[in-house]
Image (cartoon, rainbow, N blue to C red; front, side, top):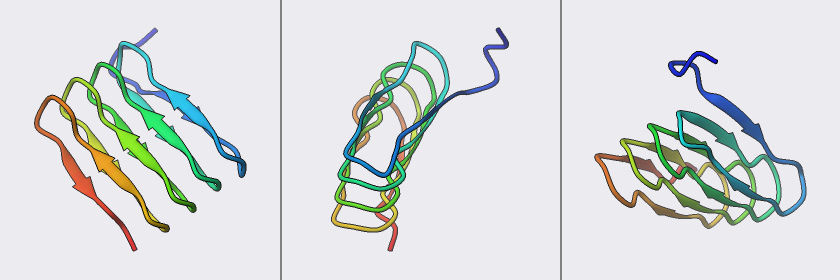
Length: 85
């Protein structure tokens, strides 16, 4: 496993609870009211459509809420948060 490449975790059009790994993650919620948690590593979280809750966890993370009424929490680290449209 190459630790420099992110683990990709994709949701569905339903309401999903998606959790990251110890390494770098790219987590995409797609549709639905999702809960995304990055855990450790420098993670990239994309809420997609719906009213989502995003937690970056440990590490320097990038969180993008996209559409809907989203709540973004950077948690520990130097994070970039963007609520989207």
